[in-house]
Image 1 (cartoon, rainbow, N blue to C red):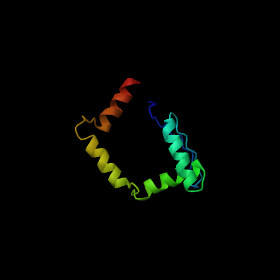
Image 2: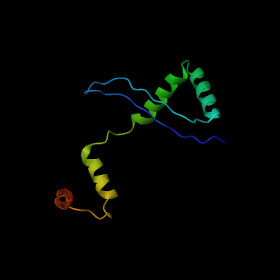
Image 3: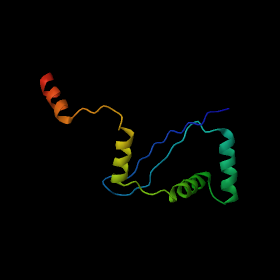
Image 4: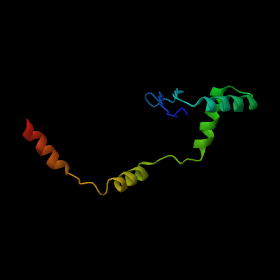
Amino acid sequence: MTTVLAVIALRSSERGTRMAGSLSIRNVDQDLIIRLKRRAARHGQSAEAEVRDILRQALDGEPDADFERLAAELRRLTATRVQTPAEILQREGRDER
């Protein structure tokens, strides 16, 4: 009955240094929490460690997004939008002053 809504707050990577981040997930269905705790117990670890393992396993097969692929995806998503050239936007900005 509870809607699952994930709110993720991550803090990591200051000045290029890899640091452990923290993750908070709110409004998780009680049944899901119970199942997670049971799974963690079967694996002999805490629910927190189990979540880390689940995330790691889910994301291990994901390729890292490179700039070219992300740029191509953005171009595809915005292909039908009307684009205003930068020089027009700059001119309009100067005229407003």
